[in-house]
Structure formats: structure tokens, C-alpha cells
Amino acid sequence: MKKPFTSLIAALAALLLILQAGCGARTATPAPEAPAKLKVVVSVYPVYEFARQVGGDKLDLALLVPPGAEPHDWEPSAKEIIAIKTAKLFLHHGAGLENLAKILTPETLGATQAVAVSSGIPALDLDAAEDADHKHGGHADKGHAHTDAHMWLDPLNAQKEVDAVAAALAAADPPNADYYRQNAANYNSKLAALDQEYKTALAGLPRRDIVTSHAAFGYLAARYGLRQLPIMGLAPDSEPTPEKMAAIVRFCREHNVKYIFFETIVSPRLAETIARETGAGLLVLNPFESLTADEIKQGKDYLSVMRDNLANLKKALRQ
Image (tube, rainbow, N blue to C red; front, top):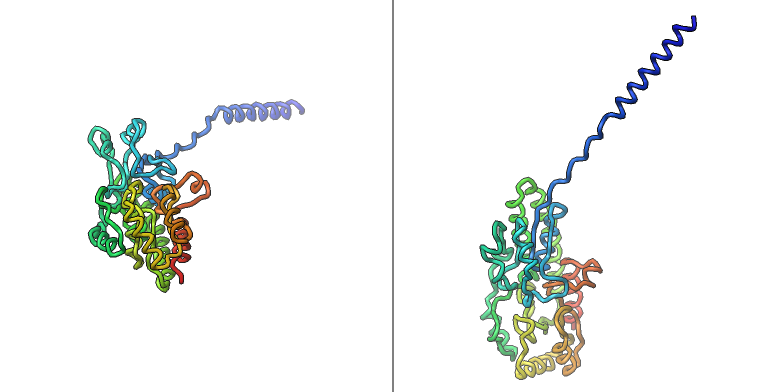
């Protein structure tokens, strides 16, 4: 009577061993590989910021001009030229901001598509800006290029650059086109809110003149009804003549200018000289051409820098 029962137990045990062996022999299903990211190289920080906001986690994004460097003076290295050639897209600002003579050639680009994100934005009437400079007692800087490339300092122009970035990414990566367009729309709503903040904050202030380190703020001034009086010309390394320095000092005294604006990546020496001669204070007005390593570490971005600028403008232009 015990033998059948014992045989049943033995059979079940053998079956269990077979099943366990079968389970152990199975190979784990490999995890699906993450989709390859779109390789994009950008020239300057404003373009990097907009590409980062639009591209999100879909991009392998590289910035050429290093933190704290002046874009006007930057020259691409051999390593950077190789990086551009291996990218799908090269996004640059254009309008004369960067030195791109070595980059925008068939030999350097190869199959890489180059896109200037500012190409759809009309340039300011620089002759009119020079006329205003003469009325302020200044002297137009004839020794440098007369294209103001700082379109992004007007938040509505920044929206156009964001749209240009989104269009370039969508064309290069059609499967993710809707993702890029949605990110652009979300970010542009934040830029619209920023524009409204500027309009509300600056509309009622009695002062309209801003004395700046260099002529980077023409688009911002035009958008919000301000008058820019730059110490230097469009190139931040252009030294003003003694006559122009004297004219700016005279203007500041006559109009009781309270603050002189300087920039974080340009020497404040000339702004300090004007401030010392006139008794004015000093405040930062950041053109967002490049962020310093410290500003990046602090988590600064376009929106926070522009709000810092607005706070300093309000301080300088109130009665």
C-alpha cells in the first residue's frame, strides 16, 4: 500500500525538478535601449538656453562658447570644429554676434545643418539709434560693426527665437516634432508673462534713460520706451573717446542719473569711472550673452536674469 504513494511522491519531485530547471534555463528579456538623442551643437548661451527649454531630454546638447567668455571675441578650436561636423544640427544666433567665418563653410559643416535662430527678426534702425546718441551728447562708434545682435533681450523677440529653435529641431527629428512644439509653446507662455511684467513695472516710472556699459540693450529699450546711453559701442571692447566720456559725465550730472549699469563678463572699469565722477551708484544689467560659472552654479537662466534686470531697472528709474 505504501509503494504507490511513494512512487507518486517521487514522480512529483522529479516533475518539480524539471520545472525548476526549465525556469532557470530561461534568459531574461533585455531592457529596450534608450532611443538615440539628437546631437545638437550651439554657439552661445542664449541659443543654448532656448534649445535646452525646447529640446528637453531628447537632445545631446553641447555649448561652444564657455561660461564667462565674451562671444564677440570667441574663436572655435579644432576640437570644437570636429564636434560641429559630427552633430545633426548647429544652432547659432547670427546677426553678427559670433565669429563664424571658420564654421559656416562646407568643409566644416559637412552634413550638419546650420540654423541662425535670429534670421526672422528685423534689425533695429541703427542710424536712428546713432541720432539719439548724438542728441545725448555722445559720439557714434564708427570703428565697429553696427548690427545690434541682442534681439533676445526683448522677450517677444525671444519667443521668435524659441519658435525658430523648435522648427529646426522638428525638421531634424520628425518623430519628436510635437514634443518640441509643445515645449516651445509652454516656454513662450512664460516669455509672454515676462513681457507683461516689464510693461507693468516700467510704464509708470519717471526716468527713461539707462547708462550702460555697451550698446547691448537697444531691443529692450525700444520695446519698453527707454533710452539707452552706452559708454562703449556695440563691441564691448571698444574704448570710448575722452570726448564721449566727458559727454556722458555731463549728461549724468545734468539729468541726475542715479545709477550706471555694468555687466558681469565685461570689465566694470569705465562704468566705475563714470560713477565716481558723477556720484552715481552701480547696478548690474546683464545682456545674457554668457553666464559666468558662478551664475550657472546658482541656477540662473534667461527668466531669472531678466527678472534681476527688471528689479535693477526699477531701482534706477524711480524718482
